[in-house]
Image (tube, rainbow, N blue to C red; front, top):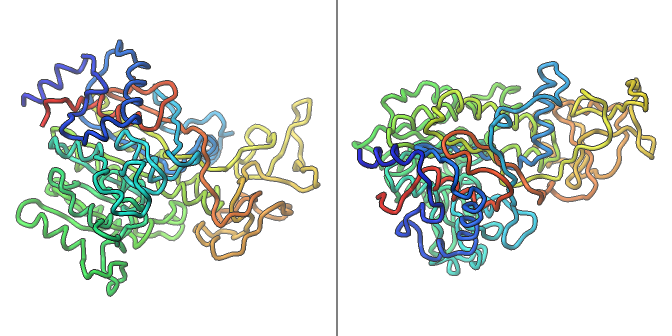
Length: 511
């Protein structure tokens, strides 16, 4: 009660950013890291600590994996066009938030980052190298010995230590880089179900989390990392981690494990303390593919709503991370259709959260970990289908009836990729990953007879890579609710950690 009263009284007090987290909660090398201190100092300078800052009891961090600015723009247009509008004037749910910032995403060893290093920055306040999860930058990737004594603690763990509830939701495997960075430490992001040396695999770390009493709700894909090879999983150590998780809470808390959307919908949340949902062996389906095939998987909005409903039972507050992992995968496959539809589904999940929370005590942050090399180009006329071929206006503003052609006399699409596997026409196929089974076909193609708005169209690409790559430009951060005023200007990605600790006022005296 005293803590609740203190938080209520400090709702309009100034919150010192750098000291918002107890030194006892984080190792000295984490709080003394230049990344940690510089991000805190810069954020303090930007806000000048002169504005009223409400204390957030709850934080929901939405991460659209690979959702760069071009993805936001194209998804905004597509969402509007799906409603019969021109599209350009549309706004995704979180684009209406009152506060925003640009975020610099580079890793310590790469201009263009990966998800492990970027999510580590957000969750710990410390930037690190690509491929490692919550390990300091001077450790070597995939080297267990070099990582010893360089582990970083996360915001999720801080909230657990203070008796607040926690949750993770992802359309990717729950052991994949972004969700894994909320709770695990690994010098190799690929060690999802087995690890080398004395390191512990990521799935085991999730189930055995020592902070607090463990994560309260975990919903997503990746069942294979938790089950044995004789049951279709990947584990060769004979351990079924789903059973071990259930046994951990047996007799103490009511824990439920579900594997389908129907089972999730039937869970009595009022009597459930812990909830684990693993809905697919690997990543969950693309949203368009889930709908087309009527897969028994929950949508990201449904998972988000369920998680919030369970976490809200904790009057002390909660932290929830929601990732739309398949935006990234659609781009990697060179398929804008699925990337954009998953971005729209992601915006629906943000709206589902807005409909359930009280913004007086809840901070909602929406961001990405990095961008992708999808471009929006040419001079298409207003309202031209964002997935279509370019139709331009003439100099007088009257719309042309014919397609615009490039210097090679071939039509071209508004959306293209700078690199990747290139063109493929898979018709109505809604699974973008089918592209990997077809030979690369980069460069210019005659698209005259191709339906570029079909789910199975994969855009042209210039440079041949086995998978389209991330991009290195800034991404956006959008904020609403308690403490949202901290989000403004241009920030290092590591500053997000300080935004969350400052907004929640994780003080030096809080245990």
